[in-house]
Image 1 (cartoon, rainbow, N blue to C red):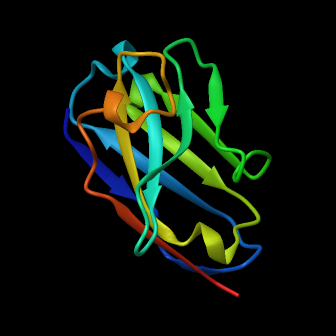
Image 2 (cartoon, one colour):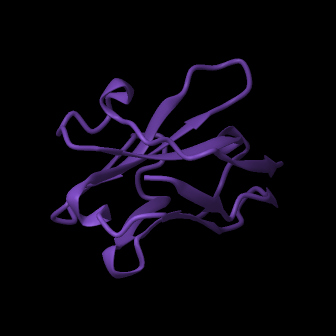
Length: 121
């Protein structure tokens, strides 16, 4: 699977934006999907995941503000980011997994190239 990530931009605190990851193959429905992010000088961390059945999982830091979704017909996954904060500034990556340890980075593969989100205060 190859991804085309989009939606990253510079925004102000409190704004909303939506990230997209479009897959090159029509087998997206076979995978659980995840979003991770990496801030400058920090390790990559789990943000959100959605299972093949549509169940969602979130990091505590984004719960209630971010929403992950998928459209298998369009081979695309999304991350709706509301009420963003400066600490959300990072490069955001999409990836797939077939395992159910959704927050564990090592279980994911087919990583996207990343899209930069910058939140100013």
